[in-house]
Length: 107
Length: 417
Image (cartoon, rainbow over all chains, first blue to last red; front, side, top):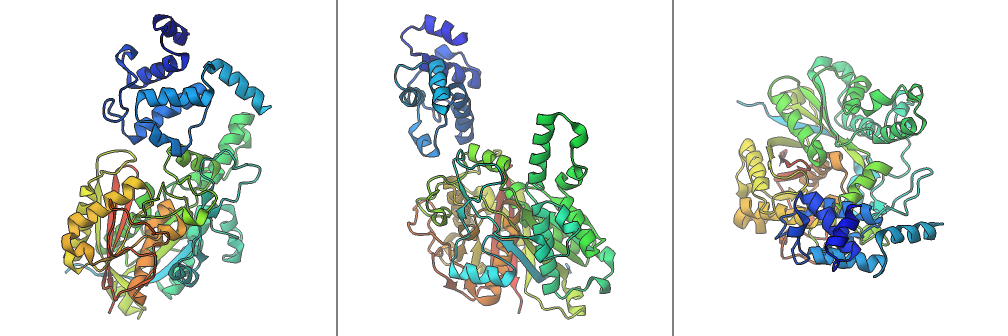
């Protein structure tokens, strides 16, 4: 629900971006409007390695995907995370649709 | 004058051998105990990010001990039983000649009887039939199950404790054994570190923490590479180490063969982070300094360090910074090795198995290699680290063990001569 509301308010943002921002806002207990794609997870948001793993765990759950360890280094900024997930899911796939395709694939 | 405490017996169960002689031979040959994990019955490994580990192969407790009690307990407790039995035999310590209340048992264990725990919890949640929970569930999962069991097995009625400080448990067990004998509460303590946590849930948990190596699933023997530039996390292992500690007077009275003196113990908390060590190694240095002070030894006298070195990026570098901080110029002259390069990180057993390796090194003058040390990392390079056996007539060995929960331990062993 919340995802859709955000999408309406910020039409320029992709569904993935909205959902990442929401997870991040929730995790940091911060207003997501104050969060931007250029922010670095470590320096700007002050996350240590365990905090980053916790955050990514939430995101993995939300999008039903698994990020391999070797990709963690690529995820330095909020934008990196968004692009990574969009890329993993395919550019125009919404999370819900992604879940469906994955479920189908499993069969 | 403070009582002096010595080591008179050793025992080990490890991924590179059951029994001290097998372990020592394999360690000096630089054999890796890390392999593709053998999956659990009915539980595929495919979805695990890490698929390798240091398993104790073909371990059937009945081969080592009379069946009965031993067969009803968790694997970690079986390891503890087998290792402590070997250590007592090695020490020629006949319990029938000892006053039982003067013999204590201190076990370090990070996780305890997890296999039984996981099985029973799953069964209960799925079936919702509490009456089907196994009657042995509680006696098995309580963290002191092994220390209690060893007391029964060996007839040791002195202080009986379990230390659980994650990856430093085994080292603290030895340190607390030292403290117990010094305080006059026992003449002998059977000190053990044991863990067997390669279970579906615990292994998954460490995978989720992103603490494990994942780049070497196809070449498992290369995965545990402490201090090497290509290291990418630790490899889980399992096993047990056991040492018989006794007061020097007690050892002399019974004319025991003495391996080494446990001369000092340092214990601190970094009070910093649940799983990440301080990168500057300052608290690690303090811990080592406390152990040396306790032993009355100066940093310049240290010959050999059995490092904690788990093969993680941050941990190994922090430890080397700590060593440099404390030893200054001497850091370029000490021999350093990482037992985990051979067997992986055996969690609660690590400090005790490392202690066995340290004592063997003092005895033989041969320091086992740190295998897979191929590409020195400027962040944690020391001239004394080598992928080959090093010969050094070391008189003083320092052992480090650092655990989740900001926990640090260090021990000092002196060659007996």
